Length: 122
Image (cartoon, rainbow, N blue to C red; front, side, top):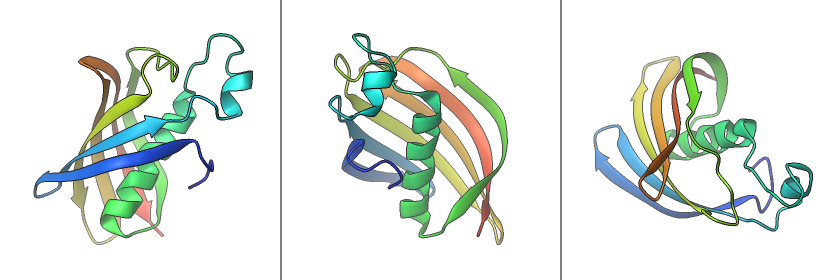
């Protein structure tokens, strides 16, 4: 985990071949929220991308590096004080040297993030 104590994995559910739901709990007391932003914490987008990468690495058992991102859409602000529970829907397709991912991240029924990206296996 790149950011220690930033989040906790609550559950990982395998829905079908390559499809997963991952429950994440954000630590609203993490120091990153003191600078982003004081009094109105917002989860940095780059941290969300890192969480997704780390979870895909766990699921696939492979170290990854971002190769390309076709779509990255932040649809709603994630305030860890108000909505610390997130659900990551991951659609993962692996090949010999790459991992393709489609993700939708939710808090409650709200879509917070959508992305499609390709990681290179390292």
